[in-house]
Structures are given as C-alpha cells and as structure tokens.
Amino acid sequence: MPRVRPPKGLSKEAQTWFRKIVSDYELRNDNAALLLLEVALQSWDEMRICRSTIAREGFVLAGRFGEKRAHPAVSAMRSSRSAMLRAMTALGLSLAALDEED
Image (cartoon, rainbow, N blue to C red):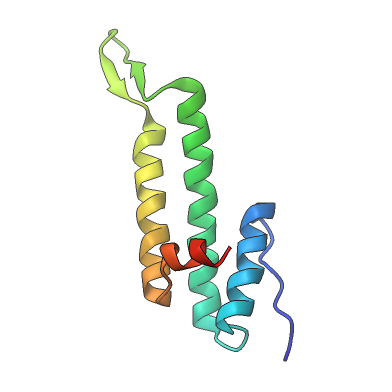
C-alpha cells in the first residue's frame, strides 16, 4: 500500500495527526477523505494561530473612537473551528475517539 505524506504547509503537530489518522482509518486510497482531512487539519492550524494571537493581544480591542470591540481573530477562530468540525464530521471521525486512543 502506498505511503501518503502529509500535505506541505501543515504544522508539525498537524502532520503527526495526519499520519496517525491516515494509518488508523486506512484513508490511503480515498482521495476525497484525504482532502477533507487536509482541510480539517489546515483549519485546526488556523484555529491555533488565532487562539495564540488572542492570548497575546486579548479578546477585546479598542476601536477607532475608543469603543471596545471583539478582536478580529475571535471571528476567524470561530470560523476555523467550525470548518474543522464539519470536515471531521464528514469524515465520520470523533475528536473524543481520537483523544481516547492516545
């Protein structure tokens, strides 16, 4: 069976998840599943970047006139999380099941 390499551009941690999921769920010959997995892990990486930005800069920023407003990364994090969960659901994967295997 051919070995599938993680897509370039994923974080090291996402690449590890990619290898584990491809191996555990035998996705090697399913191009659609591999694409969904790539989308899920790209979204996961984006979510983590947003979370890091929010941790560093805070959830709330001062607007142009000094009013408080949500950091733009909050919305981006929410969108990335949603995309990740939709892709994982489409793959039939449960995050809880993945955590229990470790």
